[in-house]
Length: 80
Image 1 (cartoon, rainbow, N blue to C red):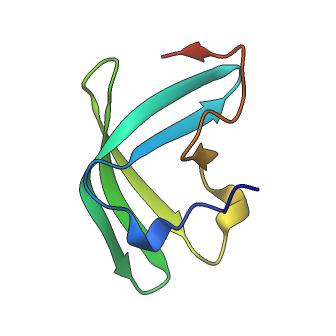
Image 2 (tube, helix red, strand yellow):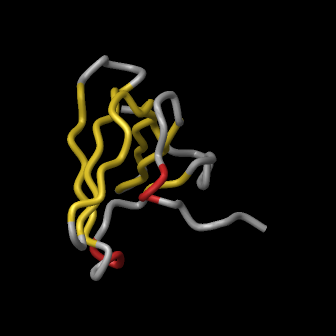
């Protein structure tokens, strides 16, 4: 069984998969997570395009967070 993503302990080099509308972004953490009150922020790099992604997650509203996984959760999606 897979564990939920631990936003507070993301480290350099961790690989994340974000899924949305039949597509996904594979990214690598380039700035570890920082906890500031009820928010967690970090930066990742899209491994396909090299674009830097700034993430922010509110620990009180995780249901509004991006759909992030440490594994390929869905098959048949297009990498963007």
